[in-house]
Image (cartoon, rainbow, N blue to C red; front, side):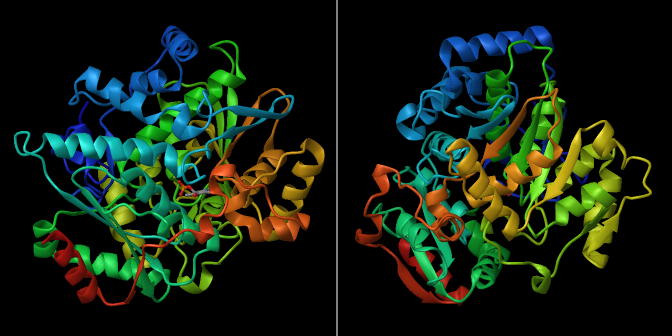
Length: 479
Ligand SMILES: *Cc1c(COP(=O)(O)O)cnc(C)c1O
């Protein structure tokens, strides 16, 4: 399998060439040259593998359709090492919870940091370590991951990369602005290769520092600076697997379709659903659920894609969906436009860059988003979240987190009788305890492994919002 850029860079690349990269050199995103196709017999075979050997074997089968530059035995081993009950809490890895007939939650958040990002990041950690060890004729190479986080991404990355050979993580977070639980999760890590840096500033300051350091190309090259953001193709590919596992749990035969509702921000999670559907997985609809930051809902309703300024980007009680633009969206638009790279480049490289928006409402392909690609969308607000958390708790005795509540709210609105609905559960309620208290007047249950983490010793360095100081610190750690 070769990979191409959504903006037309024609240099064919292999999976391992793009594994450690973010954007393609022309500013586009990487996609496979084609989506491998599964017919009913192929799906039945995968279902059998999943039944007999479990999630890790299913992951290997799907990944191997896209990765031909890692020997099959090694790839199988990497999947087996990643998707274990010890790391993900259950044998099923992503068990389906039935709320009522035909209405399910797929649990994706029983990994080490209790959010769905572990599903991909844990695999990424193992893939990075494997690939770095192979570099330089087997002598190995070093990668320094620099990131900015306001919560979920940073902790998922740190738990995936801790103790990994050849990898250091420098994670910037806004000093004193993450929830107590999120701070405790990250700062209690004592691994020598994990560096928590609390920046005296807000999240945007952290992101500006990452951009400034990455823009210094000599520094970037000298210290092998890399990232793990959600545009990474390997992260997206790892997420494709749980759409298959969800469908397999909700259906009996290859002819049955399901709907998925996905709490969405950067369009990474649901883009993996789009890839699964393009491969032939019988998904009828892919439903995008947004919070008050409704960039994506607006697009799927009207055809207008409008990036928000910071004054229009709201801080909500489902903070991991608080986005001003959706960084993976270009991948879908490329497919929507019939894989026309010149048209994609014109929209994202020119129109969006100059005008901050583009409008496909009158484009002949816009209707295909719904009709051919199965997309639908809806939006949820703080009041909806509170009401949904309460009613799901009352009706089913199940506690959902704020992001999952956005998904359930939209799924209830759009569910249709004849098709099973699967809502992706993207985090556990303990991560967002304040809103659970607001909804129910009590604290969410805490998984036993997290008792008392707020009292553990912390490993964090407070630093000013100054890119030079961060560069000096990285250089010193690499000396
Ligand atoms: C990251 C995240 C999301 C949004 O996922 P995208 O891939 O950015 O669309 C939703 N819920 C939670 C809990 C998350 O951490």
